[in-house]
Image 1 (cartoon, rainbow, N blue to C red):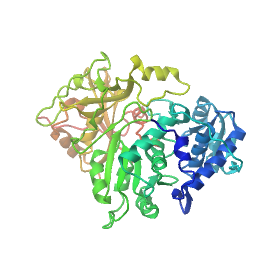
Image 2: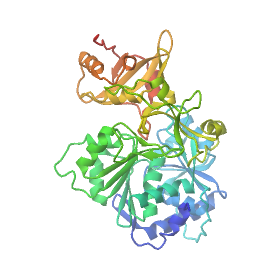
Image 3: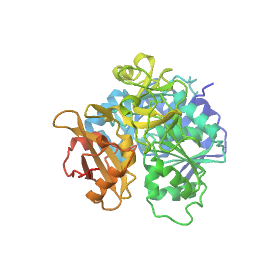
Image 4: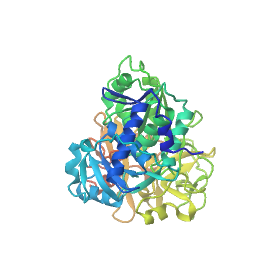
Length: 503
């Protein structure tokens, strides 16, 4: 039976073990739940029953208290992204039907166009009066979490009690976590990864939840040792950032046992585990929750793992399953046009509970009763899945559709390249030309780069970048996703055209 966040909280109401850690402050689980109750009473005095409130804050204790307060009072917390500004942020507030927004002082100027009352978070005081917790059901709405908005305006994903509580309980059980553990949460709590792979895991396990205001690569290991963290979550590039910090002989002398997340760079997973003496478990998933699966010990290099029952790779045009990928002796994909398709949950929505206030986008996501991820992938003959990019990233080269992710995986093999983003720029005749933006750890020579590209047996001539530019950093969202549309909008400025040697 799927639990609710309310039930998980009430189970900790008298627990004296450590429940929340922040900087030099500590709360037991009993104190944490008491604080949640106080905020529930405060929310009930401000909002209509079931009303929505926005929260614009870093990872501070009040975020945890208000999320618990919403669970106990029946209200809905809307996580607002501090990288949004002005009219864009006001649009999110309006779309989510926020009655009021609570914000930390340093974020108040961002809400000048909010259109609803804005209250300083520090002025919201928990009340002492008794609150009868709402009898929540797994399908009841608890939180609205916005997508990253890499391909357009962010969409508000409906996060129910079950959508938050189930993965927490499942992961806590899967990894054997208990009150003896501490979960380290440094990913932003307005995003799904921090809530479902961090906060709810600690809640379900009864582990301590150590929150850091904002992620810091240099502060990661210091925090792990300070808080005694045994588990940490991530999304995207944080593992890579931590690995760039200076190595020390005692890096593995720490309490960390397990790091769990998604979209980590494959080359970094083993390096991170070896350096810090822990296991890294990387999975595939999204805020929507329609498809989730992960790697295991048998997963070959480059693969995301095996698909779960009901998940398939379908041709976006015909809706039929794509044939298995074929490779040559060098590992080059020979039948990309047929093998690459969209990851689809053919069995239904999975944990996708819909988009709030956007029925058109929801209908598009759930075409024909199936959840369409918008992610491109292909399968090998053993059923292992390989990521090929986003549908919006598909490049049309000489009449052939190409995914960007396989090209990026090849480019980062170059010793000078630490990050690569591949995207399309218009071809003067028709379709696209391949362009790559590189972040380099050392200067890169144009001739050496061209020779390297040609030497990669698993990269076909059509996949070779026509334009290359070196950038100091890639534009990213607050959750570390690359904003390729910003790169594409800049065109071919500041780029060079590799002169590839002829065979």
